Image (cartoon, rainbow, N blue to C red; front, side, top):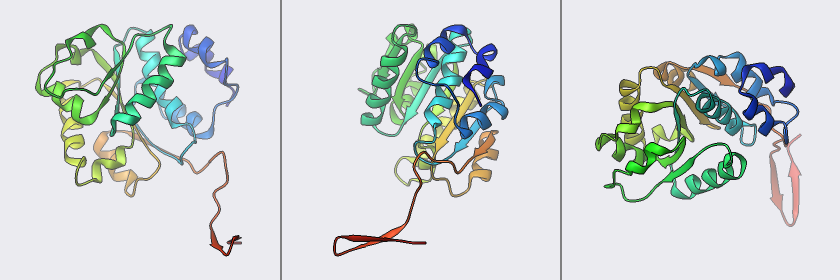
Length: 221
């Protein structure tokens, strides 16, 4: 799908930013659009690494912000990943959006976040903010959950599951975008999220399996 085909479905400012680096959308991105990305539908994206999942999240979050529908929150499992995503988005959208990173003291209310459009946080930090009843939470329109398969993690899973449950109750009209390369039960998870499932096997580099021995790799035919 050519990028220009979605020009009339996204804000002009977003299109102007994207066209600098993108001419054509990847298969998973096109499938997400067909599955209701621009109509506010919840989506569970289950595609290989580097297949373009982050852009799907961008399209939803930035579009909703620029159309004054509400804030976007990007939930990640690790502080390092939150920092990485924040820097990437800051470089790309820093002149158009107000972006913030919230990964610090879980006992802080971070009231300053009320002034920001796109917020990057760990699940533990956002869970704390919901328990502090941060007033700006009601203005969230888009929730992006990276590595959503960690719902099955014995350490982080329960916190993430409770957080998603609370946010869905608090924000009945929120759009949820779940991202993962490895989900064992995608249909079941999509049903729990009330989301349309987007699956695809395309990857930018072919994945091959082989055995390394004595300095040589023998690939499976």
